Image 1 (spheres, helix red, strand yellow):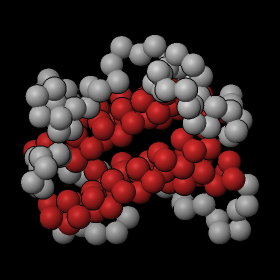
Image 2 (cartoon, one colour; image 1 turned 180 degrees about the vertical axis):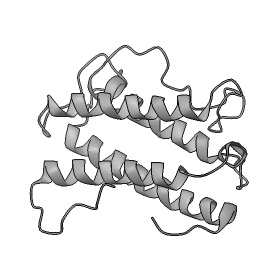
Image 3 (cartoon, one colour; image 1 turned 45 degrees about the vertical axis):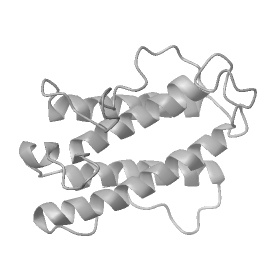
Image 4 (cartoon, rainbow, N blue to C red; image 1 turned 45 degrees about the horizontal axis):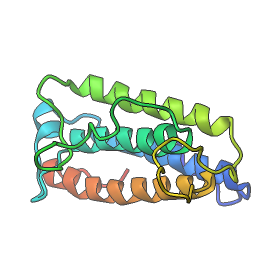
Length: 169
C-alpha cells in the first residue's frame, strides 16, 4: 500500500510524484473487490462507470504526458469517450483486466517520461498542445493531473459508497 507523502517532504518533484502515485494506488484500491457488473454500471446521471473512470484516467495520462508533453504520435487520445455521447465508456469486448493493464501501462510510461525531464521543461512541439504557441511546463502538467486525480477520486468515493457502503481509502 502506497502511503501519503510525509508532511516533512520539501522536494517539489518528490512531493508531486508521491501524491500522484498515492492517488493512482487509491483509485485501484477503490475498485478492488467490485464485481464486473458494478464496475460497468453507472450510478450517476452523467452515465460514467467506475471502470469507465479507470479508462478515462489511463487516457488522461496518455493525453497529458505522452501526447501533450512528450509529443509522441499516439494512435488514440480520445478512446475513453463514447464517440456519440462523449461519456467515458468501456466497450463490451474490453475486460476489467485489460483496462487495469492499460492504466498501469500508461502510468509506467508517464513515470519514464517524467524521470527523463526537469520540472521546468516545457512540452515539446508537435504534440497535443499544437497549434497553440503556449506549451505548459512539466510542473504545471503534474499539478493539473494531480488535481484531476483528486477530483475524480472524490467522485468515486461517492459512487463506491452507493454501490456497497464502502467509505474511506
